[in-house]
Image 1 (cartoon, helix red, strand yellow):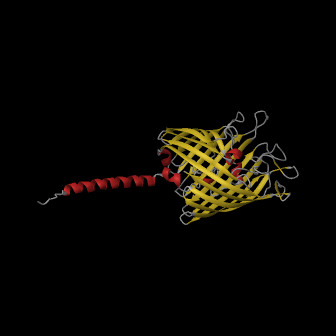
Image 2 (cartoon, one colour):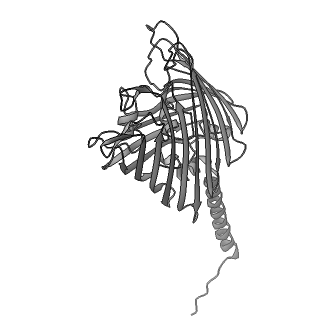
Image 3 (tube, rainbow, N blue to C red):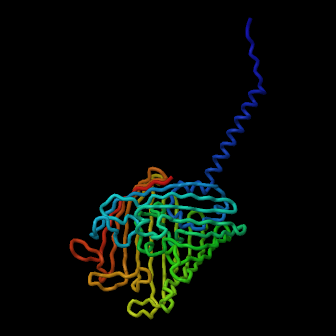
Length: 400
């Protein structure tokens, strides 16, 4: 007796229809993930990422709930300035110790983003935290909470990383691993509140109040006030103007030292080329080095570029910097070999190469030449004082 198999065309059509629906749904989810800027920014090249301090209106209203990330940056550096073993170099931030393997930063960050509330907590340790951060809150890189006050307006309060300049405290967000003098003397961290309003997808403005200029703690009864405007005409260009008004004079000094610090930067980013330009201008009352009753001025400029090839796996980069603070508004006391107080006036040049086996890891090697004006012989090389320092830095970073 033969067996007869009867198949239903309708049954097969139902299976095909179900598979087609599953495939379409998966494709839709995949496309949504690809177009999600929050997810893309977690893993793509982060150069100039932190410079987008406001993000944009779309990003600010997109939710990602709770997220934890980490970052590790190790280095080996050599400086021509001869110091004691393990001692931090002058102008210490990134890779501040010569001739020793060490950690720039180990960092863990947790963030929350919802339609009406957001917050970030980032803790860090390493040489950057030790040599360049607040002594009291040394382990906190940033910690702030925010609420949505209106449709396009957010209020954030707490401890912040600085919003000035296109170089970040995190080497992974910079074109190179070392920090320019301009960046070194800008605020690294601020404590206070920010009110941000998104005018549209391209323009945002912000007003802020802080405890002081580069401090978590209040140093007097005065506050530092700021204004910023951010413009992002497209995915490749961003521009920001910032101004901080402060007075860091002690309450017992008897007179004010009003400071105005202005910062402007312009950045361009593409698959092949990244370029950043920054200019700064500052003035402060009762600060002249020769005559303390006079108003002092400072100026600085910075330009950096990176060319990427082989789909961004390899890159070559360079940076030129100029810094002039001869009345020491920001630099504090600088003593030359004759124990004379001098203002800081310097130029520098950096070249480097980068290898990125994946988007969230890099290996860099770079060299920097720093030249101070003739009377500023503050470095010590081959048993004599000099105004020149040579640097070589190799660094390796991974984030996840």
